[in-house]
Length: 246
Ligand SMILES: Nc1ncnc2c1ncn2[C@@H]1O[C@H](COP(=O)(O)OP(=O)(O)OP(=O)(O)O)[C@@H](O)[C@H]1O
Image (cartoon, rainbow, N blue to C red; front, top):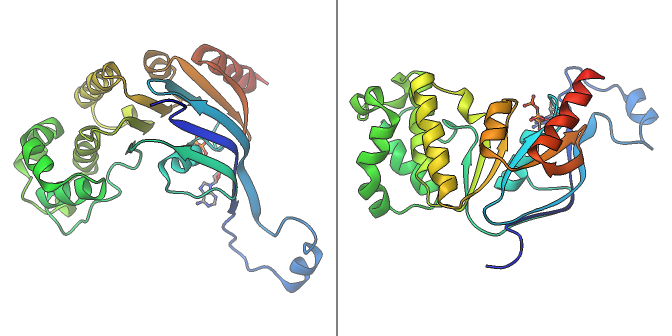
């Protein structure tokens, strides 16, 4: 395949702040010629390209649009301006227990979530033992119990186990290595190393510099929703340090 795997062209998205109080008529009249009340752009005018096999860390202070960018790449959010083109399927290691249905068992959820990500039942049957084993002993023992009885750690482990088994070429991760206990974290690291060794493409949002420098060659630095550095991961972290010290 030629050309970039992910291409953002003047990408922008607009959100509406949750407002506790209802706007009064006077506010609406005063604001009618400006940005509609409560609206803001968490990301705007962002352009970049990511090639197959790139490993990209997204860095920036809290609330600068990093997770929003991942959700745009994942197709969960639709841009209001510009465009995002993604060529290839995405394994979103984002909200790991998000797709689970609490009334279903771990086994049923594995088929449900795997299915939602486009995997057929045959593939899931063949990889079932491997996935459940990866999720750990506690999950293995409770695989036929409703997920509502799982601890949050068990849900996250099962979620990570399923999504990290997707054969998709693009991995999106948001602070994934912050979940689980030390043992599980080691497993996550091992899995990420293996997936990157297979040539997958990674976009990782993290505040953990060790993770960023371990897994990413390239870095994007976001400042208030604008992409101000697109360089090596060290350059992006340098811009982040400068901003924090300001
Ligand atoms: N669904 C939403 N509706 C309205 N505002 C939102 C929504 N999601 C996020 N925001 C706001 O958009 C901005 C960017 O959020 P985002 O989660 O992308 O930041 P982030 O850089 O990932 O932050 P952090 O480092 O804290 O995880 C923040 O001001 C956040 O409060």
